[in-house]
Length: 107
Image (cartoon, rainbow, N blue to C red; front, side):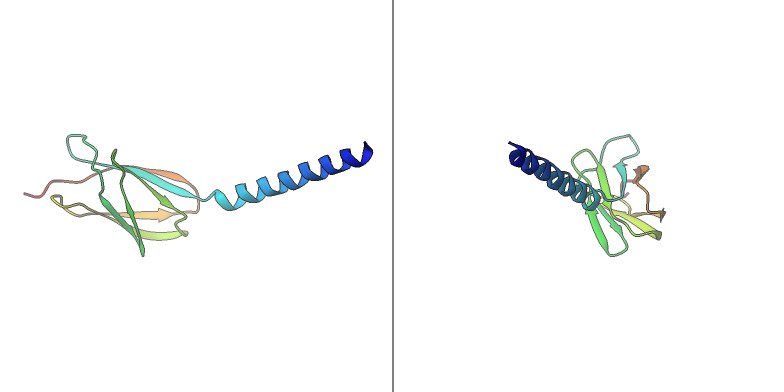
């Protein structure tokens, strides 16, 4: 009985250590926002470029920039039929909301 209890405690300890490792390695920093048209419509599949990294918006215009290193960047938004837009981004190593970025249709 005592031996069985020892193994259960040991198993619980290993489980907690594994869970802690998963949380530490899986929790990155995220910058996120949404791309919209001037009339408030979301822009799906817009390309977002930050440094050497490329991301795309989902069907609701949302994007997530994962694990951007600290520093200053130019965030570029591209989508066929729209003017390219650039904004300056300062990544500080913390997760944050970039907010709405409005892109104008090409004339």
